[in-house]
Image 1 (cartoon, rainbow, N blue to C red):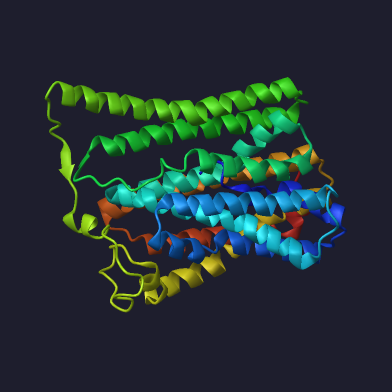
Image 2 (image 1 turned 180 degrees about the vertical axis):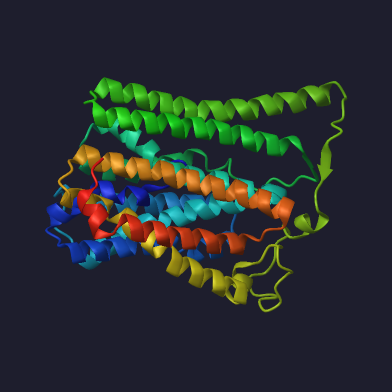
Length: 394
C-alpha cells in the first residue's frame, strides 16, 4: 500500500504531460478526470475479488499499473508518436485503476482477517496509501534526481514489482480466536508510521531549504526504506516469537478473545447473484451486488462523489497552482510530498478515531463522514480563495 498511491503524484509530472504533448489546461483537466475516475472506480476489482483469491486481483492490478504508466512515459519522452487525447485518457485510466485493484486485494483481505478491528486496519492501510506520495518521491530522487519524466517510469515499475513480489503473502487466514495483543500491535505499527511521517516531513523541509546531491538523496531514501520495511517487520517478528515461546512452554494466553461466529460464516463462499435483494444486517459483510442495490451504498456513493471532488481538484492542480505563482520544480515536489503526509495523518486519524468513537461512544461513522466533509469544504474554499492564493508564499 505504501507504493500504490501514484495518483497523488500527478501534480509532479502533470506539467511534463502538458508541455511535452502541447496540452492546454482544459485538456490536462480532462486527463486528470480520467485519472480520478480510474483511481476511484473499484467495482471491477470488487467483482473479480468476489470470485477469485486476492493474488489474482493484485496480479491484474500490477499488469495494469505497468502498462498504463509505461505508455504515458513513452509518450512524454517522445519514444512513440504523440498519442491522441483519448489514448492518453485511456492510458492514465488503466494505470490509475490499478490502484483500485491493489486497494481491493489488500484492504478486503485484511478486513476479513481482522474483522474486530476493521476501522484500525483500514486507517493504517489507507494511511500508507496517503503517505506513498512522499515515500515514492524520496525513492525517485535517490534514483533519478530531479528528472520528473523519469518519475512516470518509476511509478510504472515499482508498484508492479512490489505487488508481484508479495503476491502470495496477501491471503485470507481463517482463525477461530484472536489475541487482545493484536490491537496493541496495530498501535505499535501506527507509532512506527508516525515516526516515518515525521522523518519525511523534516527531510522534505530540509531538501527544500538546501540543494541535495544524489548521495544525500540516497541516504534519506535508505532511512525511509529501513523505517518503512524493517521496523514494522520487527514488530511482527517480536509478536511471532512471543506466541512461539508461549506455545513451546505450554502457556495459554489468558487474554484470548473468541471471534464472533457470524464473522466466519460470512467468509464462506457466497454466490454473486444469490440474495442480491436480501442484504445482511447493517454492520455485517455485504456482497458486491448486495451493496450496489442497497440504499446505504447509494447514499455513501453520492456523499463521496460530491464530497471528495474538491479535494481531488486541489491535489490534481497543485502543480499548475504552484507554477502560476512562479515556483520551481523542487518546490512543486515539496508541495506534493507535504500534502501526501497530511493526507496520511487524516486517513490514519479517521481510522483510529472512528474506531474509538464507535466502540466507546457508539458514534456512527457516517455522521463522522458528514463532519469531515463539512470541514473539508471550509478548508478548500479558504485555501483556494484569490486573496490568500495571490499573497501566500512558502
